[in-house]
Image (cartoon, rainbow, N blue to C red):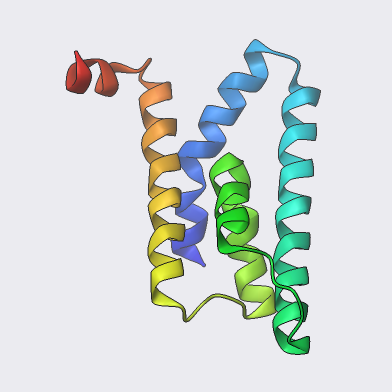
Length: 119
């Protein structure tokens, strides 16, 4: 849990900076809505897997994570004990998490890393 908390520092700082530039209520509404939707998707998929019913495609779960719901996805994985032992899924999940770390750091540094890497 300490690792997860540390993993939230850079994205939180980046979101805080965005929230200062635009209406913070819009930012809060976006992340609350996306986080809630991500948790609902995970809950639905877990229940569907237990009932052997229609499942939520993994690409949809990953899209919710990529859109900013990766922290909620991590919490949902732990609460519902869902997708935690599927190696390929976890690889993509953590890749998305690290992508968010990179994007947050680069944003906080005024995109210096990207400019140096990509000209």
